[in-house]
Length: 182
Image (cartoon, helix red, strand yellow):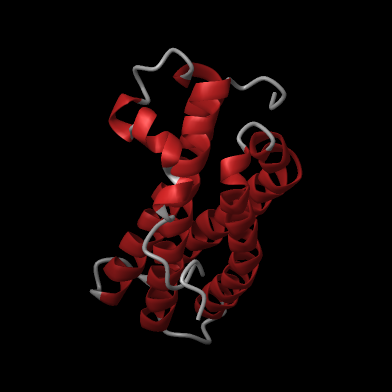
């Protein structure tokens, strides 16, 4: 199996994290280039994380009897739809605009953008599985436990992707600026 596959990798290879040495995560917010596009983009990633966390909390509360399904269902429908729609839109913008522009700024990172693009294609299938599982709960055809397991699997791979994407993209923008991305 490909060691850079989203399902199995533990991070990007060091060769693709070269700018992260000059722009470590703990210094991002203090960088003059952080405000604007970088901050907005990271906030979108945080929204995806919060949505999956909230759905996991609700699923576990329903499984423990602290939340009934009738109360959980509209929240799951709203948050699940928002996650799917926003993540698809986010990936389309990245694939068709951000990645081509950013990969041209530092040729050493081209392979990283190819990996992230491949992740997006894998995420399409993961989002489809997530949607089917959530719909099963909403239609009363599936218990919450299997949905929660699917959500945990999905959110683990989403987190791996978001983290790797941030490690690659934020340093590029901080070094070269957001010109051409707006």
